[in-house]
Image (tube, rainbow, N blue to C red; front, side, top):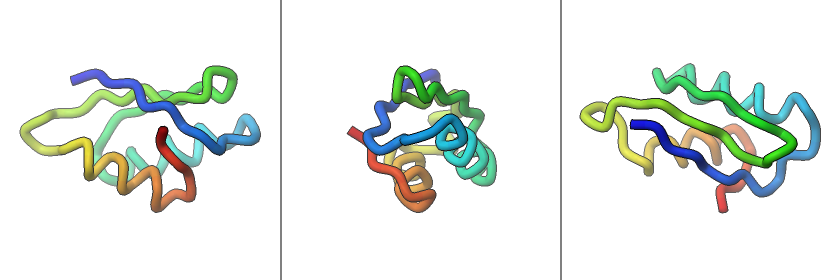
Length: 65
C-alpha cells in the first residue's frame, strides 16, 4: 500500500532522511519531502499497520498530522 503522512515539525532537509531511516529499520520503504512536509510510505498491509508506522515516526522525534 502507498500512503502519504503529513509531518508537522520537519525543520531542515535532513529531517525526512531521519524518518526514512527510522522506517527502513522496521522494513517500510519511505521517501520524504521537506518542502512538502510529508513522507510517502510503501508497505505490506499484511505485515504493518498505520499505528506501527506512526510509532516509528514519533520515536524518530516527529509529529504526524
